[in-house]
Length: 72
Image (cartoon, rainbow, N blue to C red; front, top):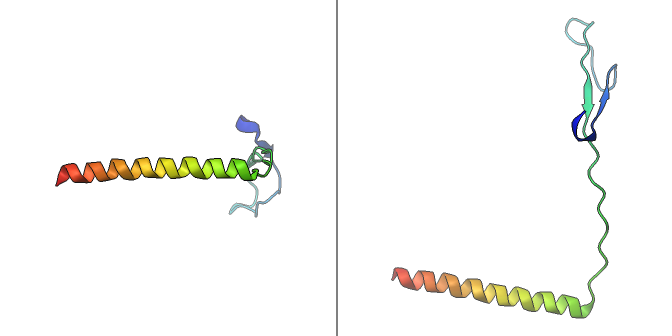
């Protein structure tokens, strides 16, 4: 099966069908990918990210202000 999905046939998760004799295959979705847990940020790393975020926010505010002023 695609994406590493497992196929089960039989009674797993199925009630009897209306006819009582037909069964369909049940496709189990693949497990989510395992992610590495990131280490906590140091104080210096956090402060640098905050500074960059503020600069990006200031830049975006300047862009939006300039765009608004052009419309006046």
